[in-house]
Image (cartoon, rainbow, N blue to C red; front, side, top):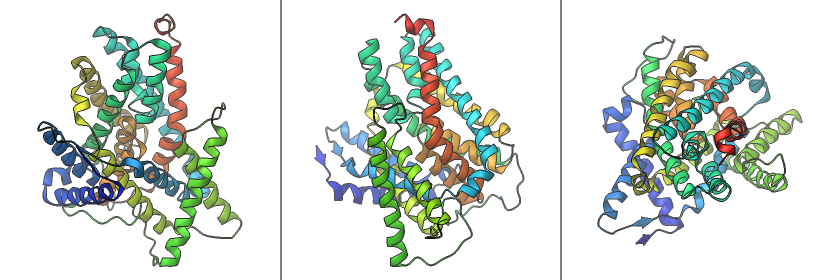
Length: 402
Protein backbone atom coordinates (compact mmCIF):
# COMPACT_ATOMS: atom_id res chain seq x y z
CA UNK A 1 0.00 0.00 0.00
CA UNK A 2 1.24 3.49 -0.88
CA UNK A 3 0.08 6.30 1.42
CA UNK A 4 0.35 9.83 0.05
CA UNK A 5 0.70 12.59 2.64
CA UNK A 6 -0.93 16.03 2.58
CA UNK A 7 1.49 17.45 0.01
CA UNK A 8 1.41 14.36 -2.20
CA UNK A 9 -2.39 14.44 -2.21
CA UNK A 10 -2.41 18.15 -3.14
CA UNK A 11 -0.02 17.46 -6.04
CA UNK A 12 -2.17 14.52 -7.16
CA UNK A 13 -5.37 16.62 -7.03
CA UNK A 14 -3.75 19.36 -9.11
CA UNK A 15 -2.61 16.80 -11.68
CA UNK A 16 -6.12 15.32 -11.78
CA UNK A 17 -7.53 18.74 -12.70
CA UNK A 18 -4.90 19.21 -15.42
CA UNK A 19 -5.67 15.71 -16.70
CA UNK A 20 -9.38 16.50 -16.76
CA UNK A 21 -8.81 19.72 -18.68
CA UNK A 22 -6.58 17.93 -21.19
CA UNK A 23 -9.11 15.15 -21.70
CA UNK A 24 -11.98 17.56 -22.29
CA UNK A 25 -9.88 19.61 -24.73
CA UNK A 26 -8.99 16.50 -26.74
CA UNK A 27 -12.01 14.20 -26.40
CA UNK A 28 -15.02 15.55 -28.26
CA UNK A 29 -17.50 13.29 -26.43
CA UNK A 30 -16.56 14.71 -23.02
CA UNK A 31 -16.65 18.28 -24.33
CA UNK A 32 -19.92 17.89 -26.23
CA UNK A 33 -21.71 16.40 -23.23
CA UNK A 34 -20.37 18.98 -20.77
CA UNK A 35 -18.59 16.60 -18.38
CA UNK A 36 -16.90 18.66 -15.61
CA UNK A 37 -13.10 18.61 -15.57
CA UNK A 38 -12.76 17.18 -12.01
CA UNK A 39 -15.21 14.39 -12.92
CA UNK A 40 -13.35 13.45 -16.09
CA UNK A 41 -9.89 13.45 -14.49
CA UNK A 42 -11.02 12.00 -11.16
CA UNK A 43 -12.82 9.02 -12.70
CA UNK A 44 -9.85 8.16 -14.91
CA UNK A 45 -7.60 8.10 -11.83
CA UNK A 46 -10.19 6.12 -9.83
CA UNK A 47 -10.38 3.53 -12.63
CA UNK A 48 -6.59 3.38 -12.72
CA UNK A 49 -6.49 2.73 -8.97
CA UNK A 50 -9.09 -0.02 -9.42
CA UNK A 51 -6.84 -1.72 -11.99
CA UNK A 52 -3.80 -1.37 -9.72
CA UNK A 53 -5.74 -3.00 -6.90
CA UNK A 54 -6.11 -6.16 -8.99
CA UNK A 55 -2.31 -6.38 -8.75
CA UNK A 56 -2.43 -5.89 -4.95
CA UNK A 57 -1.25 -2.28 -5.26
CA UNK A 58 -3.34 0.25 -3.36
CA UNK A 59 -2.79 4.01 -3.18
CA UNK A 60 -4.43 5.99 -0.42
CA UNK A 61 -4.71 9.75 -0.13
CA UNK A 62 -4.70 12.16 2.78
CA UNK A 63 -8.24 13.55 2.64
CA UNK A 64 -7.82 15.97 5.55
CA UNK A 65 -7.94 18.88 3.09
CA UNK A 66 -11.27 17.77 1.61
CA UNK A 67 -13.59 19.15 4.30
CA UNK A 68 -11.88 22.57 4.60
CA UNK A 69 -12.05 22.93 0.81
CA UNK A 70 -15.75 22.08 0.79
CA UNK A 71 -16.44 24.55 3.60
CA UNK A 72 -14.39 27.25 1.84
CA UNK A 73 -16.47 26.72 -1.28
CA UNK A 74 -19.72 27.18 0.66
CA UNK A 75 -18.25 30.26 2.35
CA UNK A 76 -17.68 31.81 -1.08
CA UNK A 77 -21.26 30.92 -2.08
CA UNK A 78 -22.47 32.81 1.00
CA UNK A 79 -20.18 35.76 0.33
CA UNK A 80 -21.58 35.95 -3.21
CA UNK A 81 -25.21 36.11 -2.04
CA UNK A 82 -26.57 39.65 -2.14
CA UNK A 83 -29.92 40.19 -0.38
CA UNK A 84 -31.16 42.35 -3.25
CA UNK A 85 -30.56 39.52 -5.71
CA UNK A 86 -31.97 36.93 -3.31
CA UNK A 87 -35.17 38.96 -3.10
CA UNK A 88 -35.45 39.00 -6.88
CA UNK A 89 -35.09 35.23 -7.00
CA UNK A 90 -37.62 34.51 -4.24
CA UNK A 91 -40.40 33.18 -6.46
CA UNK A 92 -38.01 31.12 -8.58
CA UNK A 93 -36.43 29.63 -5.45
CA UNK A 94 -39.89 28.64 -4.20
CA UNK A 95 -40.81 26.91 -7.47
CA UNK A 96 -37.48 25.09 -7.64
CA UNK A 97 -37.83 24.00 -4.02
CA UNK A 98 -41.20 22.42 -4.85
CA UNK A 99 -39.60 20.51 -7.73
CA UNK A 100 -36.76 19.35 -5.49
CA UNK A 101 -39.21 18.22 -2.79
CA UNK A 102 -41.16 16.29 -5.41
CA UNK A 103 -38.00 14.42 -6.40
CA UNK A 104 -37.29 13.46 -2.76
CA UNK A 105 -40.75 11.92 -2.50
CA UNK A 106 -40.33 10.07 -5.81
CA UNK A 107 -36.84 8.77 -4.91
CA UNK A 108 -38.03 7.23 -1.66
CA UNK A 109 -41.21 5.81 -3.17
CA UNK A 110 -39.17 4.23 -5.98
CA UNK A 111 -36.52 2.86 -3.60
CA UNK A 112 -39.04 1.32 -1.21
CA UNK A 113 -41.22 -0.04 -4.03
CA UNK A 114 -38.30 -1.72 -5.82
CA UNK A 115 -36.87 -3.06 -2.56
CA UNK A 116 -40.17 -4.75 -1.69
CA UNK A 117 -40.51 -6.06 -5.25
CA UNK A 118 -36.99 -7.53 -5.13
CA UNK A 119 -37.58 -9.07 -1.71
CA UNK A 120 -35.33 -6.67 0.21
CA UNK A 121 -35.92 -4.89 3.49
CA UNK A 122 -37.82 -1.65 2.68
CA UNK A 123 -35.26 0.16 4.84
CA UNK A 124 -32.68 -0.67 2.15
CA UNK A 125 -34.94 1.00 -0.38
CA UNK A 126 -35.14 4.10 1.77
CA UNK A 127 -31.37 4.06 2.20
CA UNK A 128 -30.91 3.98 -1.58
CA UNK A 129 -33.38 6.85 -1.95
CA UNK A 130 -33.08 10.46 -0.88
CA UNK A 131 -31.00 9.61 2.19
CA UNK A 132 -27.85 8.86 0.20
CA UNK A 133 -28.65 10.38 -3.20
CA UNK A 134 -29.93 13.83 -2.28
CA UNK A 135 -28.30 13.64 1.16
CA UNK A 136 -24.81 12.51 0.17
CA UNK A 137 -22.17 10.75 2.23
CA UNK A 138 -22.72 12.68 5.46
CA UNK A 139 -26.48 12.17 5.61
CA UNK A 140 -26.08 8.57 4.46
CA UNK A 141 -23.56 7.74 7.17
CA UNK A 142 -25.73 9.34 9.86
CA UNK A 143 -28.90 7.49 8.86
CA UNK A 144 -26.94 4.27 8.27
CA UNK A 145 -25.96 4.31 11.95
CA UNK A 146 -29.59 4.92 12.95
CA UNK A 147 -30.83 2.04 10.79
CA UNK A 148 -28.20 -0.30 12.24
CA UNK A 149 -28.75 0.61 15.89
CA UNK A 150 -32.49 1.27 15.97
CA UNK A 151 -33.82 -1.02 13.22
CA UNK A 152 -31.12 -3.71 13.19
CA UNK A 153 -30.33 -3.38 9.49
CA UNK A 154 -27.02 -5.15 8.90
CA UNK A 155 -24.25 -3.31 6.98
CA UNK A 156 -26.42 -0.20 6.72
CA UNK A 157 -23.46 2.21 6.93
CA UNK A 158 -21.51 0.36 4.25
CA UNK A 159 -24.54 0.35 1.96
CA UNK A 160 -25.06 4.07 2.58
CA UNK A 161 -21.47 5.00 1.69
CA UNK A 162 -21.48 2.83 -1.44
CA UNK A 163 -24.85 4.24 -2.59
CA UNK A 164 -23.70 7.83 -1.98
CA UNK A 165 -20.53 7.12 -3.99
CA UNK A 166 -22.62 5.75 -6.85
CA UNK A 167 -24.76 8.88 -6.76
CA UNK A 168 -21.77 11.23 -6.68
CA UNK A 169 -20.33 9.64 -9.82
CA UNK A 170 -23.59 9.50 -11.78
CA UNK A 171 -24.65 12.98 -10.66
CA UNK A 172 -21.53 14.39 -12.29
CA UNK A 173 -22.00 12.35 -15.45
CA UNK A 174 -25.65 12.85 -16.40
CA UNK A 175 -26.02 16.60 -15.75
CA UNK A 176 -24.17 17.71 -18.88
CA UNK A 177 -25.93 15.34 -21.32
CA UNK A 178 -29.33 16.28 -19.86
CA UNK A 179 -28.55 19.99 -20.31
CA UNK A 180 -27.33 19.44 -23.87
CA UNK A 181 -30.55 17.63 -24.76
CA UNK A 182 -32.67 20.42 -23.29
CA UNK A 183 -30.66 23.30 -24.78
CA UNK A 184 -31.36 21.92 -28.25
CA UNK A 185 -35.05 22.62 -27.57
CA UNK A 186 -34.66 26.31 -26.76
CA UNK A 187 -33.41 29.39 -28.55
CA UNK A 188 -31.72 31.92 -26.33
CA UNK A 189 -29.96 35.08 -27.57
CA UNK A 190 -26.23 34.63 -27.09
CA UNK A 191 -26.61 30.91 -26.32
CA UNK A 192 -25.03 29.02 -29.19
CA UNK A 193 -23.12 25.78 -29.53
CA UNK A 194 -19.40 26.51 -29.44
CA UNK A 195 -16.72 23.98 -30.26
CA UNK A 196 -14.13 25.71 -28.09
CA UNK A 197 -14.87 25.97 -24.35
CA UNK A 198 -14.55 29.46 -22.91
CA UNK A 199 -12.74 30.34 -19.73
CA UNK A 200 -15.15 31.13 -16.90
CA UNK A 201 -15.14 34.61 -15.36
CA UNK A 202 -16.73 33.53 -12.09
CA UNK A 203 -19.47 31.25 -10.90
CA UNK A 204 -21.71 32.29 -13.80
CA UNK A 205 -19.31 34.32 -15.95
CA UNK A 206 -20.14 37.83 -14.68
CA UNK A 207 -19.01 40.74 -16.84
CA UNK A 208 -17.36 42.66 -14.01
CA UNK A 209 -13.62 43.20 -14.40
CA UNK A 210 -11.39 44.38 -11.58
CA UNK A 211 -7.72 43.70 -10.93
CA UNK A 212 -6.87 41.14 -8.27
CA UNK A 213 -4.05 42.40 -6.07
CA UNK A 214 -2.19 40.73 -3.18
CA UNK A 215 -3.96 43.01 -0.69
CA UNK A 216 -7.43 42.38 -2.11
CA UNK A 217 -6.67 38.65 -2.14
CA UNK A 218 -5.79 38.75 1.56
CA UNK A 219 -9.01 40.67 2.30
CA UNK A 220 -11.12 38.03 0.57
CA UNK A 221 -9.15 35.23 2.20
CA UNK A 222 -9.83 36.83 5.58
CA UNK A 223 -13.57 36.91 4.87
CA UNK A 224 -13.51 33.22 3.99
CA UNK A 225 -11.50 32.39 7.13
CA UNK A 226 -13.93 34.34 9.33
CA UNK A 227 -16.85 32.48 7.72
CA UNK A 228 -15.17 29.13 8.42
CA UNK A 229 -14.40 29.98 12.05
CA UNK A 230 -17.77 31.55 12.86
CA UNK A 231 -19.62 28.82 10.96
CA UNK A 232 -17.92 26.08 12.97
CA UNK A 233 -18.63 27.94 16.23
CA UNK A 234 -22.29 28.32 15.24
CA UNK A 235 -22.48 24.64 14.37
CA UNK A 236 -21.07 23.73 17.78
CA UNK A 237 -23.57 26.02 19.49
CA UNK A 238 -26.53 24.46 17.65
CA UNK A 239 -25.31 20.88 18.06
CA UNK A 240 -27.81 18.72 19.89
CA UNK A 241 -30.60 21.29 19.64
CA UNK A 242 -33.75 21.29 17.49
CA UNK A 243 -32.03 23.83 15.22
CA UNK A 244 -28.95 21.70 14.49
CA UNK A 245 -27.71 22.15 10.92
CA UNK A 246 -24.82 20.70 8.89
CA UNK A 247 -21.55 22.63 9.26
CA UNK A 248 -21.52 23.77 5.62
CA UNK A 249 -24.95 25.36 6.03
CA UNK A 250 -23.70 27.32 9.05
CA UNK A 251 -20.62 28.47 7.13
CA UNK A 252 -22.75 29.56 4.17
CA UNK A 253 -25.13 31.43 6.51
CA UNK A 254 -22.25 33.30 8.13
CA UNK A 255 -20.93 34.22 4.68
CA UNK A 256 -24.32 35.65 3.70
CA UNK A 257 -24.56 37.67 6.92
CA UNK A 258 -20.97 38.90 6.63
CA UNK A 259 -21.31 40.06 3.04
CA UNK A 260 -24.63 41.85 3.52
CA UNK A 261 -23.82 43.20 6.99
CA UNK A 262 -20.59 44.86 5.85
CA UNK A 263 -22.38 46.26 2.80
CA UNK A 264 -25.33 47.63 4.82
CA UNK A 265 -22.94 49.36 7.25
CA UNK A 266 -20.96 50.83 4.37
CA UNK A 267 -17.74 49.23 5.65
CA UNK A 268 -16.75 46.97 2.78
CA UNK A 269 -17.94 45.75 -0.61
CA UNK A 270 -17.11 42.13 -1.35
CA UNK A 271 -14.97 41.64 -4.46
CA UNK A 272 -17.23 39.13 -6.22
CA UNK A 273 -14.83 38.13 -8.97
CA UNK A 274 -12.10 37.34 -6.46
CA UNK A 275 -14.54 35.42 -4.27
CA UNK A 276 -15.60 33.37 -7.28
CA UNK A 277 -11.96 32.63 -8.20
CA UNK A 278 -11.22 31.29 -4.71
CA UNK A 279 -14.53 29.44 -4.71
CA UNK A 280 -13.77 27.78 -8.04
CA UNK A 281 -10.31 26.72 -6.85
CA UNK A 282 -11.78 25.24 -3.65
CA UNK A 283 -14.56 23.48 -5.57
CA UNK A 284 -12.23 22.01 -8.19
CA UNK A 285 -9.72 20.69 -5.66
CA UNK A 286 -12.51 19.31 -3.44
CA UNK A 287 -14.07 17.38 -6.31
CA UNK A 288 -10.69 16.19 -7.56
CA UNK A 289 -9.81 14.74 -4.14
CA UNK A 290 -13.30 13.28 -3.67
CA UNK A 291 -13.37 11.56 -7.07
CA UNK A 292 -9.78 10.34 -7.21
CA UNK A 293 -10.30 8.87 -3.70
CA UNK A 294 -13.35 6.87 -4.78
CA UNK A 295 -13.10 3.21 -3.91
CA UNK A 296 -14.87 1.84 -6.96
CA UNK A 297 -14.46 -1.68 -5.61
CA UNK A 298 -16.99 -0.77 -2.92
CA UNK A 299 -19.57 -0.38 -5.69
CA UNK A 300 -18.71 -3.85 -6.96
CA UNK A 301 -19.61 -5.17 -3.52
CA UNK A 302 -23.23 -4.05 -3.95
CA UNK A 303 -25.60 -6.89 -4.68
CA UNK A 304 -27.36 -6.93 -8.05
CA UNK A 305 -30.75 -5.87 -6.58
CA UNK A 306 -29.14 -2.72 -5.10
CA UNK A 307 -27.53 -1.93 -8.44
CA UNK A 308 -30.95 -2.26 -10.06
CA UNK A 309 -32.45 0.21 -7.59
CA UNK A 310 -29.63 2.74 -8.04
CA UNK A 311 -29.71 2.41 -11.84
CA UNK A 312 -33.46 3.04 -11.75
CA UNK A 313 -32.89 6.08 -9.51
CA UNK A 314 -30.42 7.48 -12.05
CA UNK A 315 -32.88 7.03 -14.91
CA UNK A 316 -35.70 8.62 -12.91
CA UNK A 317 -33.44 11.57 -11.98
CA UNK A 318 -32.70 12.25 -15.65
CA UNK A 319 -36.36 11.91 -16.64
CA UNK A 320 -37.47 14.11 -13.72
CA UNK A 321 -34.98 16.82 -14.70
CA UNK A 322 -36.16 16.71 -18.33
CA UNK A 323 -39.92 16.46 -17.88
CA UNK A 324 -40.48 18.18 -14.53
CA UNK A 325 -37.61 20.49 -13.50
CA UNK A 326 -37.09 21.91 -16.99
CA UNK A 327 -40.80 22.53 -17.55
CA UNK A 328 -41.76 24.01 -14.19
CA UNK A 329 -38.72 26.31 -14.29
CA UNK A 330 -39.81 27.86 -17.58
CA UNK A 331 -38.57 25.59 -20.41
CA UNK A 332 -35.80 28.06 -21.29
CA UNK A 333 -32.01 28.19 -21.14
CA UNK A 334 -31.96 28.97 -17.41
CA UNK A 335 -34.26 26.00 -16.85
CA UNK A 336 -31.83 23.75 -18.76
CA UNK A 337 -28.92 24.88 -16.55
CA UNK A 338 -31.08 24.37 -13.44
CA UNK A 339 -31.91 20.86 -14.66
CA UNK A 340 -28.18 20.09 -14.92
CA UNK A 341 -27.69 21.41 -11.40
CA UNK A 342 -30.63 19.37 -10.11
CA UNK A 343 -29.00 16.22 -11.51
CA UNK A 344 -25.86 17.14 -9.58
CA UNK A 345 -27.34 17.45 -6.10
CA UNK A 346 -30.33 15.17 -6.75
CA UNK A 347 -27.88 12.28 -7.03
CA UNK A 348 -24.70 13.66 -5.51
CA UNK A 349 -24.01 16.95 -3.74
CA UNK A 350 -24.22 20.73 -4.22
CA UNK A 351 -20.56 21.03 -5.36
CA UNK A 352 -21.34 18.50 -8.10
CA UNK A 353 -24.35 20.61 -9.10
CA UNK A 354 -22.19 23.74 -9.38
CA UNK A 355 -19.59 21.84 -11.43
CA UNK A 356 -22.32 20.59 -13.78
CA UNK A 357 -23.66 24.11 -14.30
CA UNK A 358 -20.18 25.55 -14.82
CA UNK A 359 -19.47 22.96 -17.50
CA UNK A 360 -22.65 24.06 -19.29
CA UNK A 361 -22.29 27.84 -18.88
CA UNK A 362 -18.63 27.84 -19.91
CA UNK A 363 -19.77 26.60 -23.29
CA UNK A 364 -23.21 28.09 -23.86
CA UNK A 365 -23.28 31.30 -21.83
CA UNK A 366 -24.12 32.63 -18.36
CA UNK A 367 -27.18 31.83 -16.25
CA UNK A 368 -27.21 34.09 -13.24
CA UNK A 369 -30.54 32.81 -11.91
CA UNK A 370 -29.26 29.21 -11.85
CA UNK A 371 -26.22 30.17 -9.79
CA UNK A 372 -28.47 32.11 -7.45
CA UNK A 373 -31.09 29.40 -6.93
CA UNK A 374 -29.14 26.12 -6.81
CA UNK A 375 -26.72 27.03 -3.97
CA UNK A 376 -29.60 28.38 -1.86
CA UNK A 377 -31.78 25.30 -2.30
CA UNK A 378 -28.90 22.81 -2.33
CA UNK A 379 -27.25 24.19 0.81
CA UNK A 380 -30.00 25.76 2.89
CA UNK A 381 -33.20 23.88 2.17
CA UNK A 382 -32.45 20.40 0.81
CA UNK A 383 -31.18 18.89 4.09
CA UNK A 384 -34.08 20.28 6.12
CA UNK A 385 -36.74 19.14 3.64
CA UNK A 386 -35.02 15.77 3.23
CA UNK A 387 -35.15 15.07 6.97
CA UNK A 388 -38.88 15.86 7.02
CA UNK A 389 -39.56 13.59 4.02
CA UNK A 390 -37.49 10.73 5.49
CA UNK A 391 -39.27 10.92 8.84
CA UNK A 392 -42.67 10.92 7.13
CA UNK A 393 -41.73 7.74 5.28
CA UNK A 394 -40.45 6.14 8.50
CA UNK A 395 -43.89 6.79 10.00
CA UNK A 396 -45.45 4.42 7.45
CA UNK A 397 -46.98 1.24 8.97
CA UNK A 398 -44.44 -1.26 7.62
CA UNK A 399 -41.56 0.79 9.11
CA UNK A 400 -43.26 1.31 12.45
CA UNK A 401 -43.78 -2.44 12.70
CA UNK A 402 -40.06 -3.14 12.21
